[in-house]
Image 1: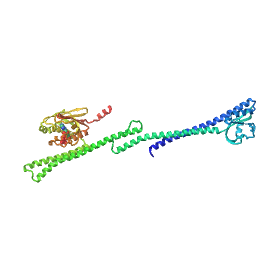
Image 2: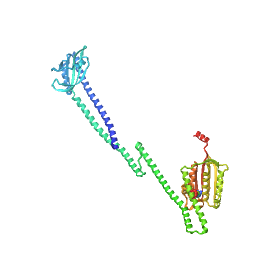
Image 3: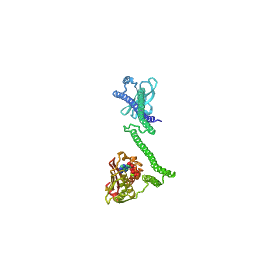
Image 4: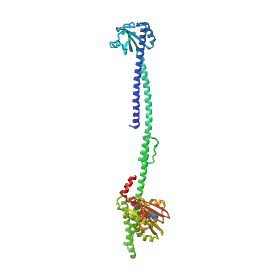
Amino acid sequence: MKLIYQQMIGMLTTIIVSLLVVAALFIHATTAAAWENNFRQLSNYTSNLEQNALLNKSTINGDFIQTSERVLSGQHVNFVIYNANNQMRYPAVAGGRIQSKYWRQLKRGDSVAVKAATTNPRNGRTQSITIFYRPVFYSGKLLYVIAAYEPVEAIQSTISKTKRSVLIGFIISAAVALILSYIIARYTNRRIDRLRTATHEVAQGNYDVKLETTGRDEISELASDFSNMTDSLKASEKEIQRQEDRRRQFMADAAHEMRTPLTTINGLLEGLAYDAIPEESKAKSIELMQNETKRLIRIVNENLDYEKIRTNQIILQRQTFNAKHDIDNVALQLHQKAVDAGDEISVDVPDDLMVYADHDRFVQIIFNIMQNAIQFTQNGHIRVTGQHGYQQAEFSISDDGIGMSPDQVQNIWERYYKADPSRKNTKYGESGLGLAIVHQLVAQHGGTIDVQSELGAGTTFHITFPDEQTPDDDQSHDQTA
Ligand SMILES: Nc1ncnc2c1ncn2[C@@H]1O[C@H](COP(=O)(O)OP(=O)(O)OP(=O)(O)O)[C@@H](O)[C@H]1O
Ligand SMILES: [Mg+2]
């Protein structure tokens, strides 16, 4: 069943049940009041007659009764008088007696009110009446009983008028309730429908749906949650797309990187096979092939290394050791390359600077960055500094080489990225994997690496390695926390 009908049925049932209960109680109360009113009136009339009788030395004055009946003729009230022996004395026609169960009550001194069907003693017709019997005592002796009766038609017409009004009221209220519940249910349903349409849109891949989220009820909250959901879906879709692009780029780059040495080797092999290479160049060709093969192996190894680091497959053997010694070593290893490029290396690291890292990986990181610095600096200066900061060892490697633009800086951590393809320098490798690996390695150490660079002015890398956390450190940490 449609939600709109469910809601309407729910609302209508509540309203109609409440209306019915109210109407029933109202009719019941009005009916009871009408009957009570009627008996009170009859009681008053009999009381009047009694007063009059007492004034007349306890005798019933027939004229007074007739006058009273005439006055009350509009209301069809009539009187009957019974003597102490339950015999009808007025009106002067032969008539019935009071039923013995009522008579016993009357003799005890209680008034009795009865609804009854009776034969009118005057015209012999049967009718529904209300009778009120009032016993009159004198010196403790029952003298007679005054009865006043009235046909019930008057009361019943009042009651049925009330019932009719209640029915009309009921119908009007039910109609209004029906219309209102329809409007309310429709309003809610429209909002749900809007959500449904939005869901369909999202299912079709359109994340740009806009939903009204201004209200404060549950549907508005749902709409707002929905909007948040589409926002994050949109974000993750973008991220997936980015990853996909990167993957595609990676495949293309990897293929390209490997093809270059393979093409060289293939060309040389063909030359050798067809004896196209002069005898004196053969040794040089073989050396070239060896170099290219080495490069290929290096690319494959570095790729494997990168993947291992990236997927947390390497285990760092961390220890605290003297950094100065290793940096001096790297500088020594790169000395010839620096001389070739006309560069000068200066190391400004305190003799006792300790660093907590995997020894080989630390050397790999410093080596890579220094090698880059030499690679991209001609006739310049490369400066390595180190110091101990707050719970970490800090290093910087700066050069005054060609530098990078902000755009280039953004991408250097990506695999196979080369800020400028013309920067290739086969002497030092050109796979574009160095910084990607360095970045992953530093992250694995829990350290940070960032770069400042200006095109044409030079580049500075900052690296930090956190110190080993001793149990004492943990405790002092806990206490301050
Ligand atoms: N000190 C620097 N000065 C200017 N550009 C730099 C510097 N260091 C890195 N770059 C730029 O960042 C790119 C990425 O460096 P990365 O070390 O990852 O690759 P690569 O040196 O080209 O190749 P390899 O994998 O052999 O190291 C470089 O190609 C270069 O364009
Ligand atoms: Mg490099």
